[in-house]
Length: 493
Image 1: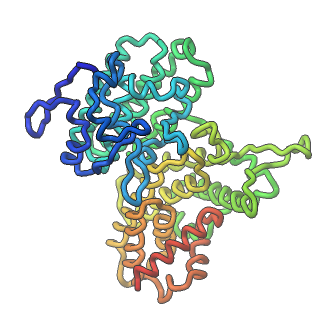
Image 2 (image 1 turned 30 degrees about the horizontal axis):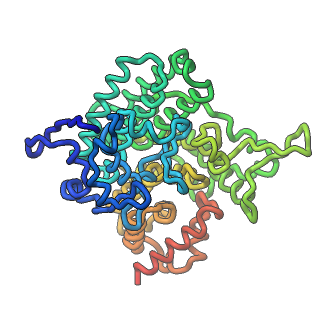
């Protein structure tokens, strides 16, 4: 930061605070209560204490850094007990942390420049810091997040006012994509204007000016940026319930699977859903049929092998093609859009946005919403790869648990709970990676016991038989569901 010092005003105390103080570990631990007094490791052989005594002017003699990078480095490496690293929680769908190098890897968004832009490009630095600080404070806004959001908006205004398609435009676009992540995680969960949608519209306008982007980047690079924005739009819809802003057509992904003799019989609606579909939109059964077929296909192809789902080319029997790659088959590509999982996720968020507008909270609506979130969760867990995230699946788990909590309040003590409620609780508890959510699901299973016939949850074979009446993928679910069943048995003892 050199000799430059920025002044910020704390809204709680009306005392001017020096930004260089805001990012010290002790100060933040005292203010937010979320970050432990971790010792940073910047250079091998140099301890955090000795490093903290080095003058910022010596670290950055040419005044190239936005602020002291040490706080950002702490956030990138910080993790809570029994929980995922912060970067894993907030990176989806834009970035991940390489497990070997511990570097930030952006999916197609300017990795050629290495890590330097994260420290020197102001919009990029503050947008990344904003997301990580938000996760560090349990997704609650505080002084640190407000500071970074203010800095991001100011910096973006400057960047876009001088927009000319220079070599830093991709960093500006990436910063906007990260800001969208913040908006739909926090601001758009409250009543008011949809900030994320505004940014999505604006960024789409920039990307549409292809003559500016292609003057600096290849067409494939521009395509990757567009794909990242599509995914932000999808996850924004999942998080807020608002309709998607952008249109993307990936229909026909299941056509080849339906035509293949091996998989044709998989396209059937699981019998457990049949009593509940009478009030569902006409498009819903087809989504569950496609998801059931994909689960069966994954089980067939993964049984004893890790080979991808392939089909024999009718024109050349010696050649196999792979028209339905899963997420893990496309690790080098990032988050693909033209595959079966993305197809299902887009259709599911479109259906969910309709339930949000309806606003009804009847038993049937609660079951319906929970089933859509469970289907999205299942689709996600079928294959994740190195780009697998945390926010989208855990959002689904949270919504399922909320629906089931409301559902039990409306349950009549004179009738048994439907089997579908049992499946929904096991989907939430078995497929979550959060111990807190797993404990909540187990507690609900225990509360539901009085609504089920005697011995319903005492025998695993019986439980498995009940679960298989709905969406079921043995490769993905069996071990996870069994472990959750065991946890439920321990809780009941």
